[in-house]
Image (cartoon, rainbow, N blue to C red; front, side, top):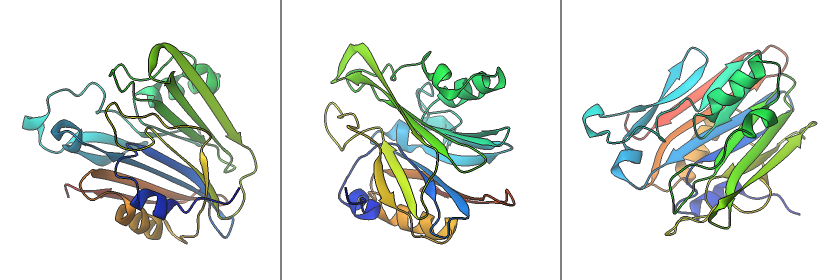
Length: 235
């Protein structure tokens, strides 16, 4: 199967929702990770990414306009013992807590399910990047929109290939209700030499009306040095 042209895919997709890209740089020296959020409602769009000591958090841009923080304020990225956790919800903390107890990310996600926001039942997407650059992706979603069944899928990439990544999002595209992501994470090429370059490509590809915030990090696998870029529509 040919690799997906991620930028073309995003340019033609008005609303993939939240998305995670994990992979390896073209020179095979850096772990690549990106996470973006989009929004259709005023509440969802009223957010920014803010860097924290161990990652990033979402924050209301205008506190006076925040109506319900329950599913939109969380830590999308946390680093714990060299592992970078990237998710679209508070399962970031669940994974970190289970890792601290000596368990793995799968055990953590067996305690969680899709978001309680019917009729969309937004999937929970999660990724973990290990210090050696290998990574995992997961999606927890309803069975074809039926909230009676939670389907949990886990994908593990133990030897990432240079210039290759995998992309997963919460939704296939826009709709009412929103259709959940289908199939395996999509394999795509990663050619941008730096986090800044990838951030420019991704930000330009996301729908102008719906994009909210973007996080990109390149992590040098030898030195552990990270290059991080954050873009917010509300700058």
